[in-house]
Amino acid sequence: MIKNERQYRITKAQADKFRQALKEFTSTSRSGAHPVLQKAQVDALKSQLADLQRELTTYERLKSGKHKVVALGSLEDLPKMLIQGRIAGGLSQEALAAKLGLKPQQVQRYEATEYRSASLERVTEVARVLGVKLRHPVEVRLAS
Image (cartoon, rainbow, N blue to C red; front, side, top):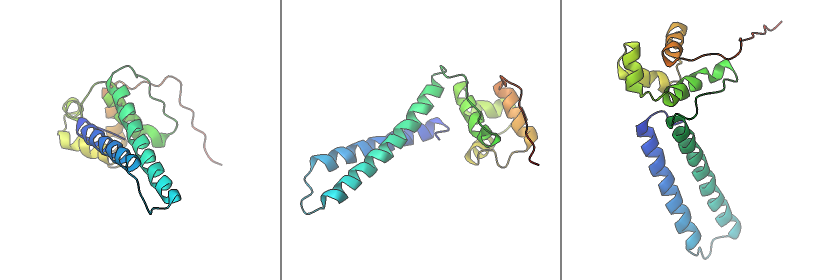
């Protein structure tokens, strides 16, 4: 998941390299290489490029501000949802840090570890600052 502009630029450059490698690989004759091996290499390049493109598209969609609802399927998805909410809200990591009264590096660490090092109180504060709202009441089912 792309979390900031730096990662976006890096991912975009990687996608360009994969596109170029795919173009070169498919345009040159690989005499002596087994056709199945060639197809596997092309498929691998295409798969990697598709993954990168999906990440770029998701980040661009969030960054555009048009995507304001982020689905939360489980509590495990909460960190990803907070990061997506920050991006969709037009906040950089630095801007979120300022709103929380933290150094930017702390928000970067929280997001790099998907908030594993953050307390529940901090996660709640991040959600409040981002204006996260629940559409429906949360139902908790306890295991018996």
